[in-house]
Length: 102
Image 1 (cartoon, rainbow, N blue to C red):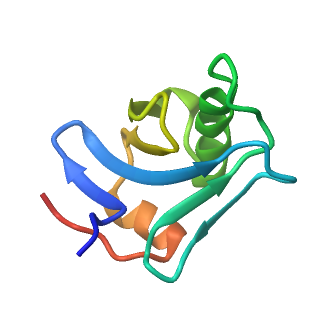
Image 2 (image 1 turned 120 degrees about the vertical axis):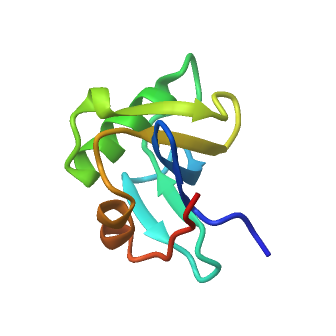
């Protein structure tokens, strides 16, 4: 069984995503396996894709930029984002995915 895309931790909510840089447009989707995939137009150079990911996901989730940070995966396509001051239910509802509690 794969790791769930959402997890509640003491600091907030962890959102695990798979990033596709240099896409034709920015988009977020959940595939048939439940994995959250984010396509970004930014290239994976000098942290541009990471910066674009944080801005794009903050906008999509209705969060302030300071409420979202890269938790792990700075140099990988598989990343974990830490979301603060929001609920697991709020994020799960937006994505339409199940969640795993702590």
